[in-house]
Amino acid sequence: MTLYAAFAGQYLVRLSTVDMIIVVFYFALVLAIGFYLKGRAKTSEDFFMAGRDMTAWVAGLSFLSANLGALELMGWAGSAYQYGILATHWYWVGAIPAMLFLALVMMPFYYISKTHSVPGYLKLRFGEPARAVSAISFGLMTVLMSGVNMFAMAKVMQLVLGWDINVSIWLSASTVAIYVALGGLRSAIFNEVLQFFLIWAGALLIPILGLYEAGGWNTLKVLIAQRASEQYVHLWSGLGSFADNPMGINWVGIVFGLGAVISMGYWTTDFLVVQRILSSKDIRSAEMAPIIGAGFKMMVPLIVIRRGLLGLGLLPEKLVPESMVAATGAHSYNDVLPLMLARYCGPGLLGLGITALIAGFMSGMAGNVTAFTTVWTYDIYRPLVHSKGTDEHYVSMGRWTTVIGVLISIGTAYLVMQFASIMDYVQALFSFFIAPLFGTVVLGMLWKRATPLGGFLGLLCGTLSSIGMWAWVKIDPSALRYVALSEHAKALAQDMFQALWSFVVCVLVTFVVSMATKPKPDAELEGLVYGLTKVPSVGNVPLYQKPLFWAGVVTVIFFALNIYFR
Amino acid sequence: MISIWFFIGISLLVNGLLIFGAGVYERSHPPTHPVVLFDLHASMWWGALLSVVGLIYCVVYRPGKKTES
Image (cartoon, rainbow over all chains, first blue to last red):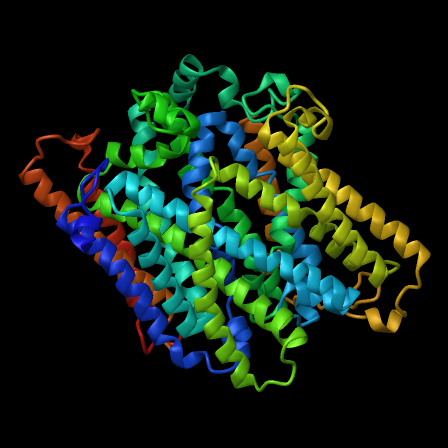
């Protein structure tokens, strides 16, 4: 197939010359940053930890940008069309408390232990077996997630522009591989901050124009109520029971499954995001970075959820689930974002909108690749394969692992094409690994009696129980009523309750085994456990520079938003 | 070392100018099938806004001036 033919299939919109210039300029700029930073990634501390000299703003925006991948931009806009404003819970209760918890409670332990990774913390706290389970499961998850990102991007490019799916995957993946292999984490972080700005510049205009066309938020709510139901515009009022909302979930699943387990697990132990914070230059920056990220995270629904809601209220056609696309010939829920882009954006703006999508996809991919590279090198290769290499050897291993990780992700992208729903797949992954890991890490930090064997078996049993519940429902779908405690429960409710139970299993097993085994002496736990660690002060700074003050501001806004949209 | 904010400034400035230019051209040569709310000429004012923000970043964080990251 010629390159021309690869870019000339069926499409929703046609890119003009100026649009193509904007897209090409983006690729050139991210590669230029990679080449520019090549000389600053000579030691392992530079390559894997960005020299630990990032400011709070750079670390915070990168922390958020690494999460603004394909699923954020495309998947959740589609989910907002499908489930209404309830999808916002994944940005507010499903993120903000966890980000603040990371900043104020967990980050001091990560930071002062000087660990290179989350599995590295587990090694210090619980020993090698816990690190091995965590590192291997995390490595598997990151390459799968990276594959999901690639597939999602290629699918959008195919739908919107008619680009061949193979060309999209290989072009974006090779670009990420080049700039990460050259500049390491610093290059990934710099590009993520750039991508953060491009995402906002390219995505913010649509909700502004959409609300203008609808005649304001109150009119949009009326339009949505007419076309779907009034429950599509309420965050909390329909969560009294599983049957009263389009998501088929209740408040217990949202608050405890999503808010207390899944989001805590993701934002505090997923090394993809935590790695950005570990690159901070001092303890105050490390605490401020997640708080800055939380402030911007609260605004992301404006460019993601609001677009799905605008599609629900304004698009003349009715979108359908992926499974009905072939039979009906209609567009799927996941197509709402590109459809809204085509609705409002002319030449130039369209190019920026497409660039924002590509930037989102690439930042998510780069996040996964850098985290995978670090965990592979520090937590699998060095302790288990080659422990006496030089610093130069490990940097070289990092560069090669970047390329190999990208190749594995490409293979995964082709695997993902076999799955009907991207979102269900990823949610299943989260609950397999993330929820039990959070149980192990948080017990390790807050309970000094937790023993190495307790931590290891808790993590293992929690992960196995999660996989077991998923397999049980896969084999017998009626089992969902037992996992989610209701016959009205739907797929997302399963993920929330599955995570909740696997967390409970992890905590119970850790508790019981720890009480039956001998704990580590206190002297070995200094710097790792609450009560035995002198948490460093952020220094004598004015009130407006204190992390606690800004965490309070974010908390007040968080509650105000939830009350307003209740 | 060149600040990351300078790269962001360059990106916003170039994109803003391109979008503003496209908006000006579209205004003088209206398309056969215009987008919804074409009359607002969003390309022009959004492009101008990005250009101004980008220019400010370029000036404030230009190479040679001491800044963080």
